[in-house]
Amino acid sequence: MIKFAAITPHPPIIIPTIGFPDDLDKTIKTRKSMEKLAKIFKKKRIETIILISPHAPIDYQKVAINISPTLSGNFEQFDDKETHLNFENDLETVDLLQQQSKLQKIPLKLIEEPILDHGSLVPLYYLAKNYSLKNNKKLKIVSIAYSYPEPKINFDFGKIIFDACKVKGKRFAVVASGDLSHRLTLNAPGGYFPDAIEFDKQLIWLLDNNKTKEILEMNSDFIKKAGECGYLSIVMLLGLIEEINKRKFKKVKFKSLSYEGPFGVGYLVGYYPV
Image (cartoon, rainbow, N blue to C red; front, side, top):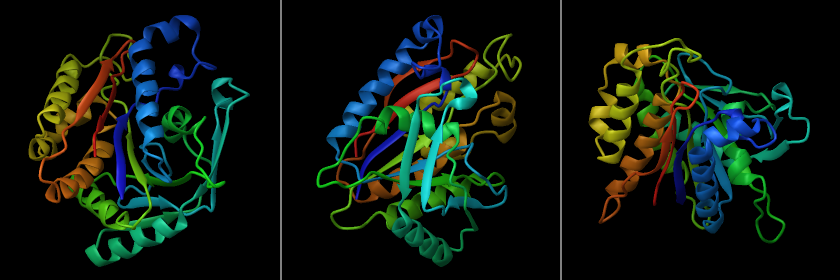
């Protein structure tokens, strides 16, 4: 069953072996929130993380799932030579996702790529680096990339994730990795967009107030101009949350832990207490 669901940013600069002291000071809120998230994660005794990343291998028209038996990565491209993360893929869950996608007629692409992207590795650094299970069990990963043209496909795939995780006695986490607007300041990596901060504020307010329908109906031009990479990851997670809420007497609500944009990119950390 689903025991953990979260939204995380993925700037490599929040990794202590990558960011300079000044960078780490500027991202203190994000780093503290990721550490808090890791403590919550540890208590849940998670066996498989389903990780939605905008930088995972993609198929523009289809949801993509990585079928490589092993998944690993490092931060050497960011001059960190010491951090290496290695996982097994949860191929049983991958098979269940395939079956459900076929039944629901959701376009799916299977991609075999053993190297994990930084959008996956940054949250995994915090959640899984010092994590261990009893009885020599190993934490497994399922790596997913969203589809671009139609948000509803991703929302519906989130519902499929719920169905695939209804395995008795197995504990799952679902993590939506993504940064918000990359255009918050004049020196932002995506260039400056005057309403970028409004996009981030609006999306966070809608999450805080459980306005799923309004998130799905956000103006596509506004989203594009904001230069984000987290919207569709969040949409997929919301499909999962809708299914969870259908089965609960009291709906789970998003808990925002922090938001900041020190380098012109919005970093949101939060979770659903499922």
